[in-house]
Amino acid sequence: MSKSIEIIQPDDWHVHFREGDMLEMVTNFSSRINKRCVAMPNTEIPITDTNKASSYKELLKKASDNIFEPLIPCYLNENLDLEDFRTGIQNKVFFGSKLYPSNATTNSSHGVSDISKIFKFLEILEAEKSPLLIHGEKVANDIDIFDREKYFIDDELSLIRKKFPFLKITLEHVSTAYGVNYIKENENIVGTITPHHMLLTKKDVFLDDSINPHHFCMPVVKNESDLIELRNAACHNNSKFFLGTDSAPHPIHLKKPDMSSKPGIFSSPCSIELYAEIFDQENAIHNLEIFCSINGAKHYNFPINDRKIKLEKKEWIMSDLSSYKDIQVKNFYANKKINWKVVN
Ligand code: DOR
Ligand code: ZN
Image 1 (spheres, rainbow, N blue to C red):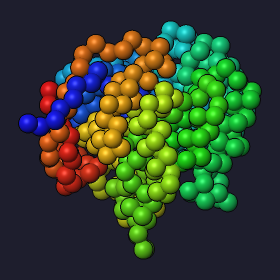
Image 2: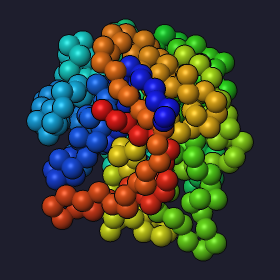
Image 3: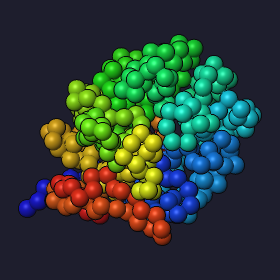
């Protein structure tokens, strides 16, 4: 008889749904599994005010065949309307706010280039106990792509934490052992961990004279030693770490075998199964539920979900592509064997 487990329904605390046909294609992959999803605001026109957030939320609900709750952070930018921001945070139209350093990743050109210019917004977040979600990478010509997380922590995050010691911070898609340790050692900071940062290392991305664009994401995946620390943080019942897939679809024609490629890995067709696979490999399947369904909800003061989902240990092969109308997206783990499958 095959092995199976039931866990409380998870939440995905970091996922990209995009707009238009892409949104229609990808939403159900997340909403069929998760109760709540933090929908990233780096859409083509970034979500910078309450009107945009409310209509985006409605669009997502309408596109879903399942009942789920999209949570929309406000895209931070120095020119936001302060009163609209305050109202959105106080009335929970926004799920906190997202800091993209400018030009760190997809659609981040409207992001933040001088941290001090957004302090007035951080003050509101701190006062309202509303979370600041951070893409933690410092981008500069003299900073190596593999060191961006460390420089962000040392130069920018430390400054934010010093100025706003009670601000609730989530360092998203932690990608280094340095980041894991920083979270463990400091107060008021937690982290999300993606499946791909626990499955890939830089050798899976950077080839002799090209890159594998389907493994290219921001922050880029790092070394084996980083992967091990990420696995330890996720799998061994540390309440400061929880699920955030960072599933980030791009049409296949924008994935190029060089650094001009769009960064982002589309994992939502199999992310919960990959988390199960990783926890099983680490002999920690008993901790899957805590990471996927409890730590995040507790941290953000949401009730624990009441439904359960069931996973069975049985082999299946992830398909190559997801397609809808004229869009095609490469699936993460395409054509590879996965040992766990959601069965309800
Ligand atoms: O790889 C990434 N892709 N990282 C991000 O932070 C953004 C995302 C996207 O939106 O494509
Ligand atoms: Zn993301």
